[in-house]
Image (cartoon, rainbow, N blue to C red):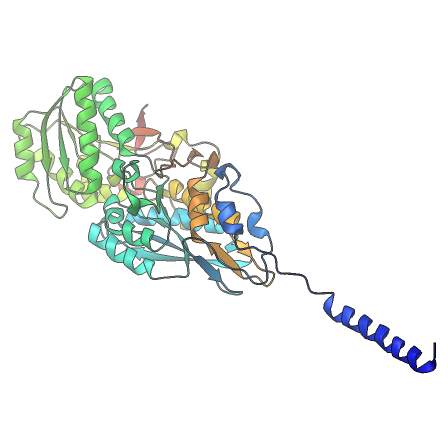
Length: 448
């Protein structure tokens, strides 16, 4: 080989080595577009998996049917609580919000290195309030998921807007049976609950009245709300099925203050038991006035979880002593609830305000577990949350070990463990309210 050809050959070898060095280090981008959707189809029995910690592709392409929430480095993971936070029933919503806050504390306030930001909307315990709150939340494209609402009326008013925006909400305290009926319709696709159904609560009150108190004639009062109207009807049907007689079913307005006309009508029917599963304001006026109506001086009276709060003692006064309230059975909650109460009392300086704090804690943890399962995390910390995959993962939850029990979600959104107890109010002093106090509870459990 002559020198000129040798020199040309050497240059070609060197050039090929340089090109190889420049191009050989780049890897093709991983196709992560289906990661979230596939994860969402997994069973919920492994909702605590490490899938959320996987590093996503450098160029993530969202193919989720409901779209994806993008959380840039340094931005918070936003969730929302919506429910009643003001007025006479504000303690119901505040009680649940505290459960969510404790769940966030247990996460160290972060998810995958991002702060968790909890926002709130007061839904006022009305359909109109629920609609307004939901419409506002539906426009926030940075929201990952929601806990709420508090009152069934709020969900009736707002769920369509949330579902249609691709959001999913888990209620800790809605108990109206129809909300999780298999025939409830597509507007409820984004709705689940950890609370019990009143199909169980109404039955428990009926059994207590008939079998334990021995009454055979009962009357009911409701306030027209989705919650109260449905619950009193379940009680009435169950009481009649046991052999009892429903002698009156009356209604009052939620903002009514003079209950004497309705109470006088009920007294004429001579009931032995009056059941009013209403909210705090109306319940306070009923119990304040019932003993002043001839024929009702000694009638046995009961309410339910809508008035299971120290605020009801403030509203009802001395006549609350000796009345009965149905509620989730705190004593039946498995291991973990006493530790939750310790955290609550240390954080807020007192006992829980109402009955659904633990259900809210479980709802938030189900959301976080599903989020961990489906979130795609980039190397730079960017998080993508596919919304349909998240919804699917929540619905697929099975055997989730919460503080209220082992929770499994049905295809129509029922996740709760329905264990109901009846409690008796022993003191009208709001400062004595502490049903979790084993030594001196108020109200105290009397059934089962």
